[in-house]
Length: 332
Ligand SMILES: [Zn+2]
Image (tube, rainbow, N blue to C red):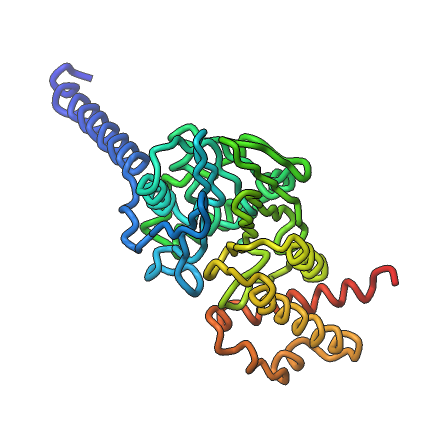
């Protein structure tokens, strides 16, 4: 190739390639570092006991309208730092939770205890990792994180909760896995973590604060809406609810819905719904009634006016039908 030809064609080609490469890098870099917009839904700290606050998510299932703010989180302020329970459902909501904590105290956040690894409770964790908080969860989360489920859920949330969930979301792995009930003291307050799973998930844990008589129960209880049951073990779940009733907390903070000062009454909705589902589906399985038929013929009016009924009831009913089938085949 002559020198002239080289200068005419090959050099511009390399220049163009180099330009395209820089441009592509800039695009990739830009995408990786751009943050999703801040949450604009109101994430306000509500005081429920001398050292304890919570933020209450909106009713219904995660959507663009509510920006994924459908679950609760809480925090306990001690003279030696803050303990957080759950981290909300998107990175911007995690930032908003941190801001709500900062509206109450300048104490450092020591640790975040995660009730269970459903996206609406842990996608906000990276805000807390960034400031050096430790993340604690039950050992059973490990199996979930090793499965394909977290990636599948992330794909779904990137589409259903864009732009608040995007490529910048990191699945935060716990710093410490708990192998059973765990107690600790911080700043003179006494905390008890109880392993109550499998119930709503395999890895459910609750957090009780002795001096405040407060108990955070995660999704063991949904106040004011139909719970998400899916393929949960409802028999173990009912046993776990009874365990919480025995602890007699003064204030109960559920994973969804308002905090309750009347744990007995508020445990009832979740309990009644689970008992109802199990009762209907047990009869159907015993009489060999196909799922579609029992689902269509059941009178759901007792629960159908509740928020999240349309989104959750069918999948709950189907999960319970399969569970009861399995139970009927199991050891008597
Ligand atoms: Zn959940």
